[in-house]
Length: 115
Image 1 (spheres, rainbow, N blue to C red):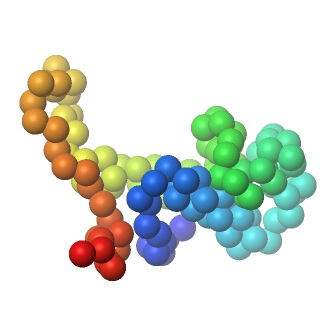
Image 2 (cartoon, rainbow, N blue to C red; image 1 turned 180 degrees about the vertical axis):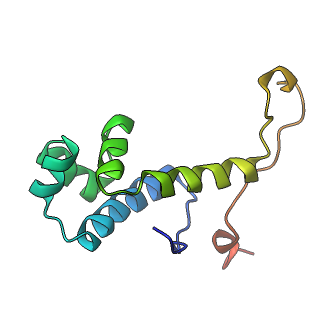
């Protein structure tokens, strides 16, 4: 997961579809079958199959799968980068819910083709 993925997450279904495809690509790159990854992660084959097809699974099971694929650190790095872009407060005591809300953050590639 070292390379930047060319993804555009505009809607929730974009995230789930991308997540499913990412898990499948990581599994295939590791040359693992679904039953082998199931055995390593403790996640049932049916759940793994559903995740790859639809992107739907519990966060616990996604974490188990990413850990078994040695991709959990890369996913954490990805999330940390997104949080930095969101400019969230480092301390919730400094958060003011009545402050103006920031505009939606989109990946630069998501803006292409939109006028």
